[in-house]
Length: 370
Image (cartoon, rainbow, N blue to C red; front, side, top):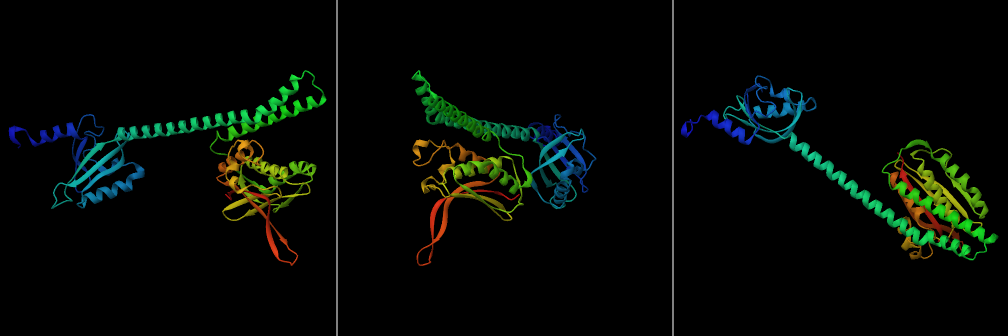
């Protein structure tokens, strides 16, 4: 007995009350023969005479069996985190430590120290959820600010121009037929810009799309059929280079991306030029390529052309920059990417030698095959 007449049992109980949740003693079969714990501990007094193995959650039974077996074979185990189920059917997370009571005869008795860390784990989970929600909110704010900046930029550089044209016509006080036509075109341009920005903002507000398996070739045919009258009005021929059946998984938004690329190719092609839409497929990915014979894209703009830009800072690049930014976002939502290359065409010189020259651009939209 310790000094002062205090029994070992009282001393251990006082230590348990102050420091830990429970001390268990296991026999050679893994049954609990002794338990001392603070009153608030959920297992207090209800596990004596029962196998400790029974407390493990069903999905962790194999883990519990290995732990008890190792402890009964003399191993000292510390910091074992696992899941238990109390007699009241409440789930709990515990931190366990095992050690033989007698090192010379380890299989006779095993001491188990148990700490209930359910609240701590749940608190960590709540903190993690809060941090995740906070980061999502920060992303949302950043995205909102980016969209605000983009719209303000469009207002300054794209919408004010047609508005100025309308104001100029109206301020004369004598709106003739040509003036009305100018107003009409300016209004249509403003409507198109606002509609495109709305699409741009919507695509940046979603994180994933619904995909379906369908015939990609059929979708491409529909895009070509829609834009053929536009191409013919500009004297441009559309050439299709893909099989009639291409099984793929994609969303309806992919049609919008292809239509945007094809429309741009037609716009920048010279009269009597050709625009080719081609598909290359392998086990991993599909490449949809739109080739034109236009002015091409300077190397310094090959990456930035897919970002929203201020037109005045991009010499030789027309448009508000939203169309290709939309294509890029759709590619990202398909877990793919888009880029532009030089369109290299072959020709023969007078001696019959074959050479290559740049003639236009090739826009490549790559998506996973599945």
